[in-house]
Image 1 (tube, rainbow, N blue to C red):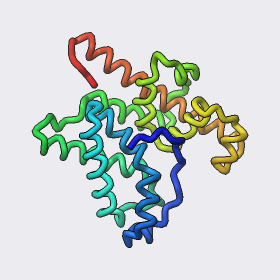
Image 2: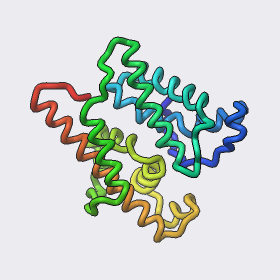
Image 3: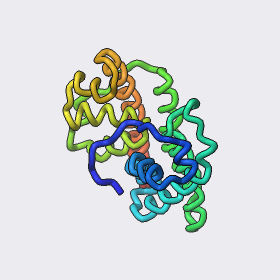
Image 4: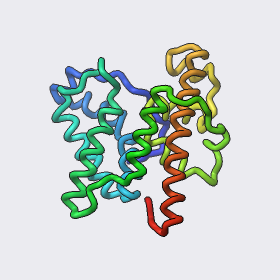
Length: 211
């Protein structure tokens, strides 16, 4: 499901067609969100690819069944899908007789990210960390927990090495707005990265496997 193609921003979805289960719109919706949703789930189920696939499938089935409850005026699609994914993780783990509680550090990540995205804090994580090979796995893990627009902005800037002008053209905004977007994205990334890293190191120190 993770095909390595460039991420896409939140797309324009025709919710009326999606509610009618229009095949073309369902496919477009799934293609737009399947990779980021799978990535979000993958680390939360201990890097179990088969389990992550099952949870992702249940997430999209549940989302499609309840699509009429989604109000685009109240928020974006990706956070709504990740909310459903958290519930599906618990259900699938319960059915398999595994621990149904999400690891404490994921709850901490969610809590701290909510605060960071709301604008609490001002420090920016060193940009070079995003492209260091030594921390690549932690970087991927942290990115999967960010709002989709932040994921896309960081990937475009640091992995695809696009200029501010090029990102602005893709986003349909000016370069000043791109700078603000990247600032907020780096802040959210720092929060996720530091929280995940600290939790893993704490687990290793106590002789426990966190992920």
